[in-house]
Length: 302
Image (cartoon, rainbow, N blue to C red; front, side, top):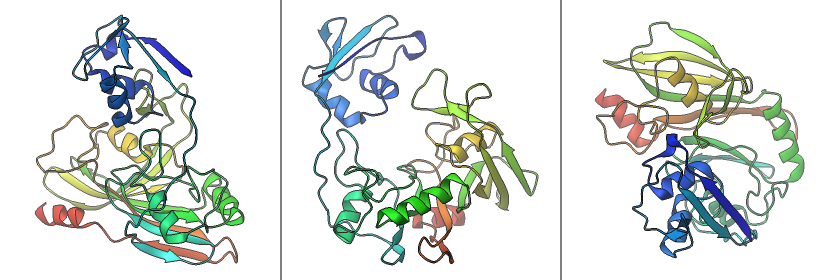
């Protein structure tokens, strides 16, 4: 059994218990944590609590988890928007709300479930049964192009291109405020937030190098439509970088403290262009993921 015991610090005070645990343990989904609480397996100061409980500073939280066993991930007939496919790789246009690969307490409805149905056994095995074919990820509420490998040779080649920053990755986003300059580069290291483990932050002391190039596509009243090209690929890089220059992404529930006047599910961020050298012959392949309907509609409104 895996034992978890921690004391609540002042920065987490008054958080709901499930949200608090989720922020401390990003390996567990919120729904799985809520299940543990409902079953009475989460103790606060040696007493079980309800899901509505809000933690207090110095509370001691304790629970046990069984040893993790990688489950059999089931193929699911979930429609895929395929942008490119051959016997080596497949590039799909991921919809909003879809998680890329299974995690604890969340084993279905993911991109991997859909790929297993679509591709059968033709996925690389380097990352194990939980992440077959997966070489990179995009956030649950980010839409757009993601490349998946069908064999280990392709996986190693694409992974090398990612490490060497030779893959073209251009995202479109709508940001708060008016960006005055036509283009620019944000060169700020990114690492874990010093207090909130599920967040990333510009971290001069412990962060890894991170570079984002941006170009203004159109300005609206109070908003700017931009294209962001990644030179590096840190977790939440574009979201953190744009927020760091005072132009957080519209709808971002983590890095933006401004209210959105629109009904959105997460950030307006779309992986628009993905370009790579084909793992078999080295030919350059580039695909463009059409903007999702909600994104197009929002641009029309603006």
